[in-house]
Amino acid sequence: MSHTYLIIAEQRDGKIRQVTLEALQAVRTASRDGDRISAVLLGSELDSLASHLSSYPLSDIHLIDHDSLKHYNPEAYLAALTPLLDSLRPDAIFTGHTALGRDLAPAIAAKLQAGQLSDVISIEGTGEGTVFTRPIYAGKAFEKKQFQSFPWVVTVRPNNFPAIGPSPSGQHERIIKVDYTPPSSLHTLVKDVVRKTTGKVDLTEAKIIVSGGRGVKSEDGFKPLEELANLLGGAVGASRGACDSGYCNYALQIGQTGKVVTPEIYIACGISGAIQHLAGMSQSRIIIAINKDPEAPIFKVADYGIVGDLFEVVPLLTQEFRKA
Ligand code: FAD
Image (tube, rainbow, N blue to C red; front, side):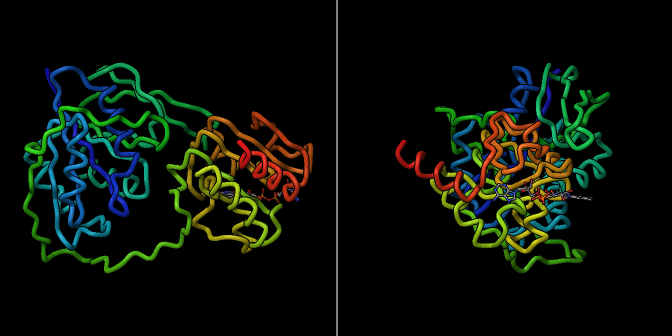
């Protein structure tokens, strides 16, 4: 029996977010030949994004384009999705484990009386036999789970599935415009979103993160880290210690009560390695720790450790990478 998969595509600043293409890869892993893979994109002025999305291997793309959907609003997004969910009756819905996905996925699961699995990092098997792996206990253990029945709602952790590439057979005819009129019963309206992050690269999708802890000692202490991150095309992150000390914005916080990141390279500078920090970064592919205390717990999870003063080591690294 064939199944219908629906991906909730996410966009930001006029671009399809990378995690959407990773979710598409996750769906292709779980699906079988003959399954239908659709996507839905919500927002405002979506035409160019839709034609970009149509270059990926999707059966069809549903566009819900309305001024009132410009910024994410859980109530409005759920109201806009409901008629599509009723008509398409997807067997499985996938989206990124982002701020939007974490909020919207449980609401959809409740609406459809569906099972939900969050923060999936790998998939084995296909169809009814699909087994999902997700971290538990702040990344200290992993569980493998299987749904007992359809429909499923799944969120995938960014940077864990390879982003799918465009397919040469992409066709614009597959774009289906869905009418949406905001119901008068909506309680809230998002007028504007004021973002505090200043980095060019989104922290949760960054391939390289240079992160600072209380060891950076001041706001200015982050400057050498920013220089290195910019040179490497990465993003700057922080421990809660650095945020609590007022050296940087909480939007940069990584850890149990901050963002969960899985970059290719995580460079921890002046971070002790508290369990709550590790919860947000221990799944990074390569961890490099710079700390002047050789006993710092961060060295237990680091692939490479440099015992030294970050204010000497980080500029030296920048200097060497600049030569490369
Ligand atoms: P510290 O522990 O003070 O470590 C600073 C490190 O810098 C030290 O190892 C020191 O040797 C090193 N250092 C100092 N100067 C230099 C230098 N010049 N060069 C090199 N190294 C230097 N923390 C998080 O990060 N994220 C979370 O999400 C989070 N959530 C939490 C939730 C709860 C419920 C609780 C209770 C705590 C949470 N914490 C979180 C806090 C966590 O327990 C630690 O307090 C915090 O991670 C410590 O930050 P830090 O490593 O920057 O600071």
